[in-house]
Image (cartoon, rainbow, N blue to C red):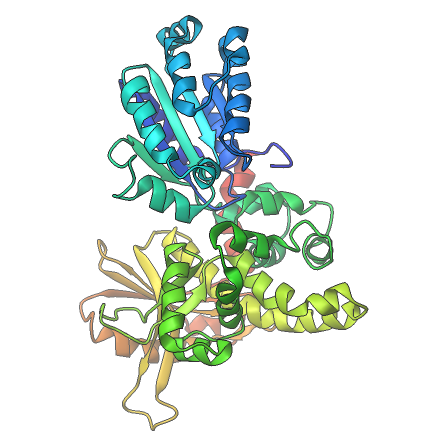
Length: 483
């Protein structure tokens, strides 16, 4: 990170410490997308108990030389640094038999963390086999915890974690590092709830991206300075992320662009991209395996439901494919003012979509005062209505299996207060779903950006009306009390 700020990794640290405290050697795998905060997590965990090494794409020779320097400094033995080693196994053989290193291991479990392990694999495809031999023959009998970490999710899952990997069965633990939860953005940027939401819709919970935003600048100033201008830190990041994961990103980029602009079914994506359905399906399978896109089916649908919708799973990538990639000519040319006006108009529609996704996460994580097991959108046919008007949708349906409770909710990102009569329509639409869950306890909610209008006194105890002010109090009241 450009600033040293370590926030909300308590669970991850506990997982690592639990693995560290087990007897014997350990092989722990850490992975997660670039900029998500793996380096800070590993550094915080090591805390003087070992070494952190960041691999490069320069090949074995240079990486071995750099690793020699770091490990020799840690154990205080310059002789290890001066040796010539042609391969990783020879180097680790010398380390394992080194007296000062053995004494360190007798004092505490030594952590050896190799970050961006996929760079080593790309330069030498036998690296997984080599490190399997290193662990089995040299480290497994020592008081050592070996951490292999990487940002290329495809390589980490296929070459390190998969059943076919030589390292399969050796690992004693694994951890995927995910973006920060929404509530922690406020610890970087002391914005009001409205601007916190807009920030999340733009860059998600990636710590490195959040740190690019300057707290003394407004949201609009930050997005133009950091994303929507040529040479900005995050201007080319979307393209860079695709090149990290995919060797031929062009068709994948076209599919992501089509989804960002409203094509969500296989047929719509095929029409936008000019690809046939079988080809689109093949590319989508890859993008789903990388968790760059996520499939959506209506709440309660069976596994056989075929008409899935596809969405970009990461807010930053969704923003980048919707607003940056298609408008590079305007951004880099002389039409930035015109683009700015168009952007401000279009962003409201985009924000409405992202607001639904945010509220699903917040509902699951307890913004209603209790958690839910699952939340998703619902859509279906109301047979009592005439054709053309018979498709109904509910923004959020959430379920708690333990409490046997269903929540039905609508999300409204509008600049005007929402009429409370919307609740009556929500109750009416919910009847379609409740046929499958006749014994459930039911709660209704409306989440609004701008408050409500109408006779609120008519609202009964089953119904929750929540605007951004209410959400802000719920999410951040504990933070404020602790200050």
